[in-house]
Length: 240
Ligand code: GLP
Image 1 (cartoon, helix red, strand yellow):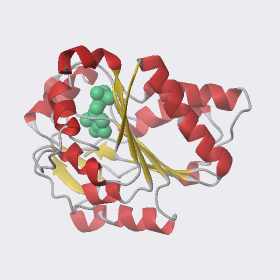
Image 2 (spheres, rainbow, N blue to C red):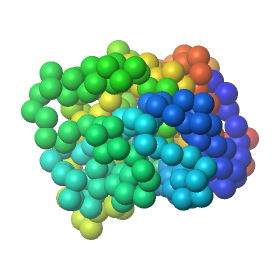
Image 3 (cartoon, rainbow, N blue to C red):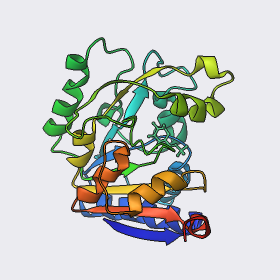
């Protein structure tokens, strides 16, 4: 796992360039995409690159990490809405190539079919991740099995409270989500983790030590052969 400490702007530039280069090298590549506030600057840069004819997404396929249970694409808090609003509506991606976990699956057997779709597409070439305060990646909360594939999960109180900032009432935050599993994530050929802000110090500390533990799901990334972590440098003072 490679770790870089950079400013927010530098991280957004580096990460968007990695994605743009990937598409230029392989116009029909498969991207894994994240939501939350951390990837927003990267998505804006991808839109800018498309608008200035630097890149086309017309043959790119995407697989998002997760979706809240019970929210559809018209709900402004759904990740379907987020992705359309913050990226897909502004680029030339073929809507048939967009995949986002379904927030209305009934069972894990139905949820795991998402991994078959990823496999059929040839696997994820580059997967973008954000980090939860409790070390979650996707919506894989502490103690999720490292061998998990896509599944329905219950959100921790910490995650519900953290994500309440996007909702007008904490009671409206769904208590469950459909998420790629940790094995689905580790199957990606290349992983990029973005960590912005100072409020994730505990998770960052766990990421930077030598231990791998189900208590901190992000620590599994230490086993990945091609994972780069970009940590905002404001966090350095708090760590060292
Ligand atoms: C949500 C998403 C995660 C994301 C996390 C961090 O919980 N399910 O995929 O990484 O938020 O969000 P932020 O980037 O806003 O800190």
